[in-house]
Length: 213
Image (cartoon, rainbow, N blue to C red):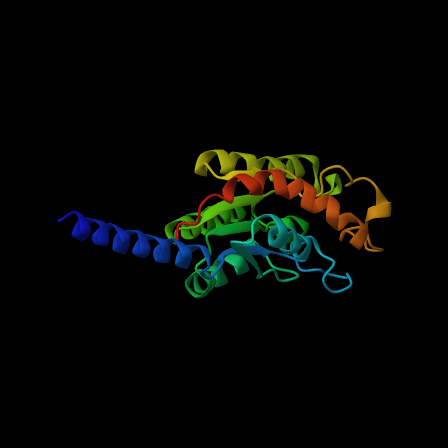
């Protein structure tokens, strides 16, 4: 009887080891970066953007995750809302980094519509089982002080309402330093990309908990 029990215990232990090993060595969970030109390496040498730097850092510190950069230059929240559903279905991300809104602001689009679009994308991502990191941006005051202030506040208000993690300002710490920007004075240079990652990382790192998929 003791030998039979011991045999069953050995079988159970072997099965547990196989299951654990399979989970640990399985396909990495996906972080979907869903943004505009600020995340799409606009005007930069290839593989120098902050999203690539994030991928490199994860390879060293959280190899259970991989990054898919679905950012498109010129993207608005309306365009993002339209194409997100298919990406969620195809990529099944564990985390969605939502970095949109800059082009809405630069075009002076409706803040109510922008807010609704961002809220819809947050809801869709969470419904698909993903945790969300919302990244805020600001626009120059020459678009009107009231509009610029309402624009900047929108991200914090939405993050609080939806209870999602927030990076208040992607370009924090160097937005007024033209040495970190390309000739258009809008898009950061390669030199600025590590600083962007250091702004994003403290809010992203807590989301890198045990994968749910």
